[in-house]
Image (cartoon, rainbow, N blue to C red; front, side, top):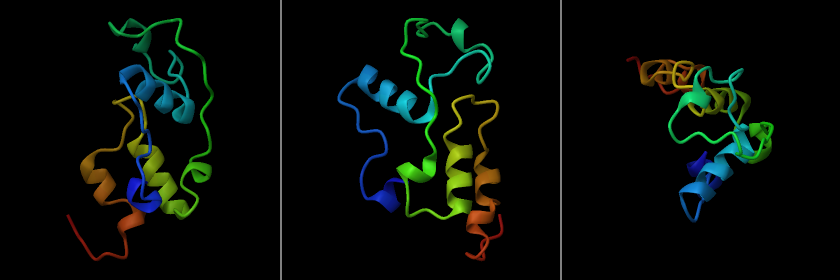
Length: 100
């Protein structure tokens, strides 16, 4: 996404600014989207509650396969996030001719 847009995806000025930029785009995690997140030591129930945005509005020059891969790479719940191998095997890279 940063290569396509030629700028940082979440350009934060501080840790909390960075985190809130991520939440504004991907949505604030909750127990439905990331089971166990509210038990993490730095999670605050007072975090603002943002809904996820459509990534195609954030990276409009990325094709649908790229948007699908990006959404899987940016999944906040690590247990649901795509693996490196899964990313390399994703449809987005099918025309490169790389076989892991």
